[in-house]
Image (tube, rainbow, N blue to C red; front, side, top):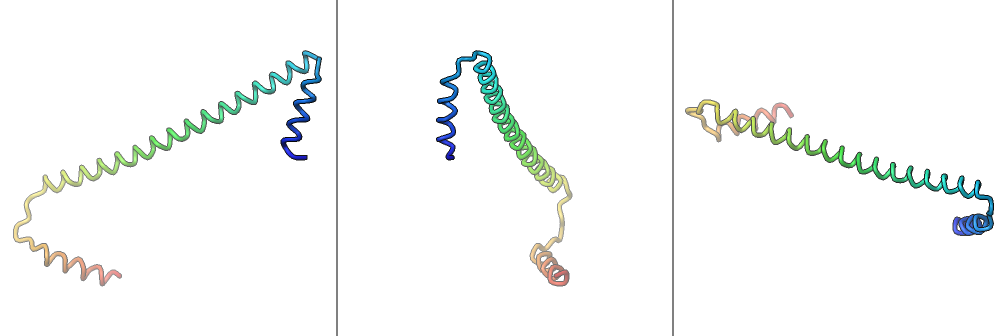
Length: 99
């Protein structure tokens, strides 16, 4: 039986119920179901906020690390007699040796 047919059968059955105790139980079941669905949505939103906070923290740590590295470079002494081209060749040769 398809879901639509089952829903229609339930609606017809509920429409024929005259016992207020059963109606109250069905209403309580419906309210519990809605509350549980709301809790699930709240949890999803809470999880999403937590993930966003985590990503923001990671990004801030990257920025702080970069800022610290830049400041360390600024604070370091000026290199005299530094040839960037020779240094680059040394680095390339070292990379070739290390694979």
